[in-house]
Length: 137
View 1 (cartoon, rainbow, N blue to C red):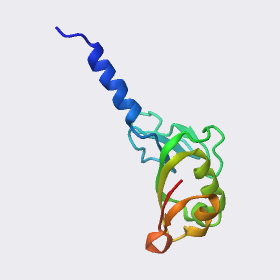
View 2: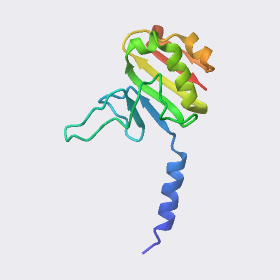
View 3: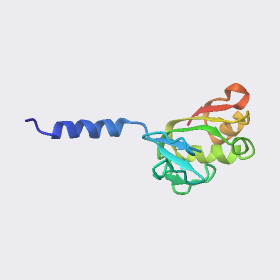
């Protein structure tokens, strides 16, 4: 029977190379392997919590600077994407590592590329008239 050490070393290498992903506004749609963040806690049918970090995406003091390689989100409320766009962009920029990427969608067109450019992002795109924001730190 072979030693478990080579398998353990391989698992550690895979975990170290996997991107660190933050899923903002996760709600009841957590992404496996990601840190799921929302302002309120959601639970699955068995009562297991679905949100890892309870915080507003525009203010995430629990998350250290440069902690994530990717920030994603699906159907973020348009109020956050539009009215609070500068705060959201600045906070996402803060938690992303250099070279990190963001791709977030919202319910109605609300993202404005200038908010993300002002925060320091490059390669900013807001396809769909602002339904999605994509950018690189």
